[in-house]
Length: 160
Image (cartoon, one colour):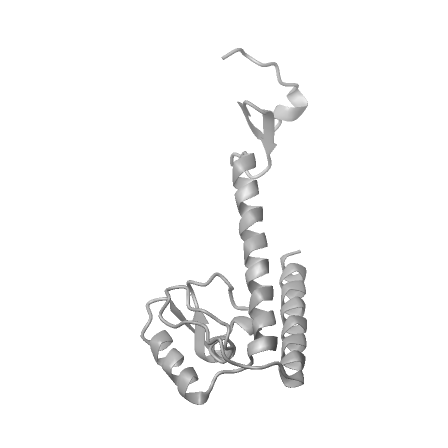
């Protein structure tokens, strides 16, 4: 590796290192991570897949509606016995730690288990294909989308 002359201004109290993309100066004395383009594309694809999955969930809520109390209780019992269950004070049942939805209010199991079109990531319970369109389902979905958007805006606001 050839020696690279670095101006003294860049060396004063800051750690530097050289890699294929050039010299990286860090203020916290740690190396910066070089992000691979393939990793960025994979991350974007996962986010897009998650977004489509969410809108599919909401559309199925409009067209299929809610499940019966019996089906809700069957789903609930399977979730309570699952290793992926994440207990939380904001929901009596909790959240699924395997689906990737996070702690969005719409991801609460008390909500997910009621939607006929929802699925379990471990295939412990399947979507119900019966149901019919209703304006109550439409308003529930509209409210759910607003809650999700507000939750995500708050999360972004808190990060910055």
